[in-house]
Image (tube, rainbow, N blue to C red; front, top):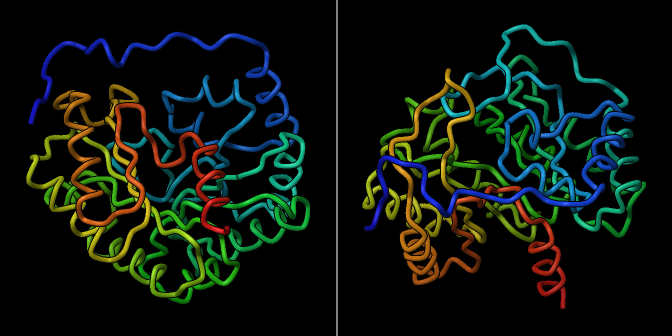
Length: 293
């Protein structure tokens, strides 16, 4: 596979979006005191998404009980309880931004008995009350592998259930604090077998030192459990304290992985340097419309 080491490649340079929509989106989020993964995780697509009047909500606070080596979200062992009015605040912002498809992710909350699953379920109910036409995608933690917690979310029938593997098996223990590769696969398998969501989705990052064979094995693992959507993007170091980029992946390699996944029967492969599991929600709006015909 064609991989690029050393200098920052040309295809990772981006021009800034124009217009004032970005500031409007930011103002609405500040008005309702909401966090977004776009900002807390230092997503490279934040300016583009805000300019399109969209964002990925980050529920249950801005600090996480896990300290993953790749993630810019803050770490804390002692966190306040969930904010009771957060579900309604998110629902109001979905309405003000006129989102046809809302993406809601969460920090890991290992301090809570249900891992925060009940709060996520409450958010889904609130968004649906305020925005009955909107479709929903949830990107959750593994809830410690507890099926009863997972079922609290799945019982609300989100259109897309997303849980990220993040990396290949060989790197998982080093990169994902307190997470487990096989436990994540079990979460995705449980969601698929539950038949309570239209699409099961997962994603991984490249550039952390994984081999081509390991990436292909990961895609095979996801295909085997029936994953409907796989997103594969380039890891970009969010700060000096986080894991360094080992290599920059070429566009040709991303295309090869996309073709490989499709050859295994994965219906929807999204692979590219700026692909993130919560990026370009409009793609999934069209996907959901097609699926319901």
